[in-house]
Amino acid sequence: MKYSTRDKILDAVYKLVYINGYNGTSIDMILKECAIPKGSLYHYFKSKKEMVLAVVKERIAPRMYEFYDLKKVKEEDSIDTMIRAILKVSKKEELVKFGCPLNRLNQEMSPVDDDFDKAINLIYERMKSDILSVLKDSSIKPDVDMDSLAQFIIATVWGSLSLSPKHSSKKRYLNIINHLINYLKSLKH
Amino acid sequence: MKYSTRDKILDAVYKLVYINGYNGTSIDMILKECAIPKGSLYHYFKSKKEMVLAVVKERIAPRMYEFYDLKKVKEEDSIDTMIRAILKVSKKEELVKFGCPLNRLNQEMSPVDDDFDKAINLIYERMKSDILSVLKDSSIKPDVDMDSLAQFIIATVWGSLSLSPKHSSKKRYLNIINHLINYLKSLKH
DNA sequence: TTTAATTTAGACTATTTAGTCTAGTTGAAG
DNA sequence: CTTCAACTAGACTAAATAGTCTAAATTAAA
Image (cartoon, rainbow over all chains, first blue to last red; front, side, top):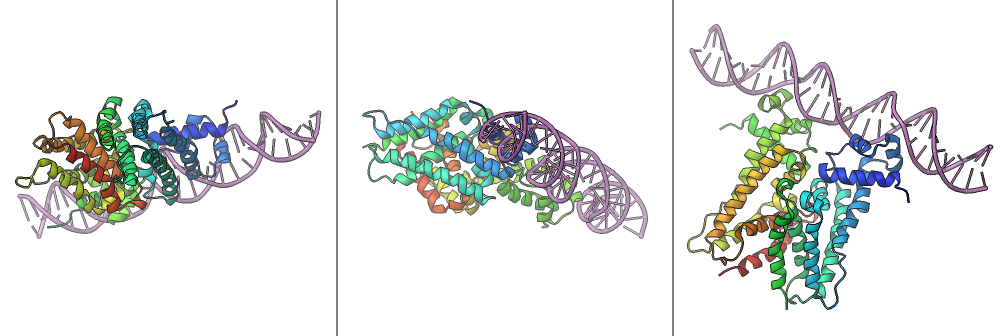
């Protein structure tokens, strides 16, 4: 199986935009990272924006869905499935170090570009509904508002990951997120 | 009292960088916003970076400290002082719409620039210690880890504010943050 | 009022930016 | 082997970028 030029570009752009942001990543940086000529890049993508939007859909989105695609363990309370997913985040070094790539791009691009706003929000909504479907068949008290709880979970995880990369660590993430887990457990029954 | 050129620049840069980010804000945009010539700008600041670092210290920092500078109401439990501060965030329209300016800049600049990382973290640490001092003389159970709780509060607030500006609203913020408040209340005694 | 320092003015520069264009190369289908 | 489309190659362009420089205007001090 060969590593196509298009894949090579998407991987490089994902990596560069993740760290440097959209405006901090130049076409030349991408060409250098891929070691391909300009002609190839513009053969696959008609503009920088279209290229990064492809990264959102083909690189960032799958990574996001991955975290909430936990197979429910038999007899396990769904709320524990959720907790497992939240804890699993700490295993991804890039997340702990540089934060959520979707959230990063969202903060940079959503206020200034509608297409990014739409593409990113589509992923966000899908994540939220994935979380909702897990929460729904859990033992959470029926009087709890599930929609805001799903958003609360995402917001807390993203927020915890958004602190300075210089001081970030798995331990720090787990310490912070421990409060979220305590809260979730308190909602049981 | 006159509105100095330097203040005019800092106000404009704060506003532009808040929305467009560091790399999304050009010198020309700043000059246009201020309606001043280039010579004036470079008379006050030796570079774009130095200028934005001044904005961090002189515009962003005060806004951050403001939120945790709540005068404790007599006989009030400090945990309620904290809750009041968190709720007060919803009153600032720009925060609800565009998120925390410190967090935004942090995500863009900290991974790629040490000076920004340092300047921003200094403010973060001060916020954290302000929160800690409020939590310390509250009725929170002694077995709760205060340091991670302070970070949990910041992370949750920042995370709630970081969602798409297109879909943000005071109501949404309050719905999400309600879970944080419930959790804080559960820690009493 | 004279002098000196501060501030304004904006033309200019060197570099970087995203994107174009034409020609050449490669690889698969017939 | 030939043909044609897919892809590579990189020189080139026009606009934008951060920053420089010298001169003029303004303000404050003497």
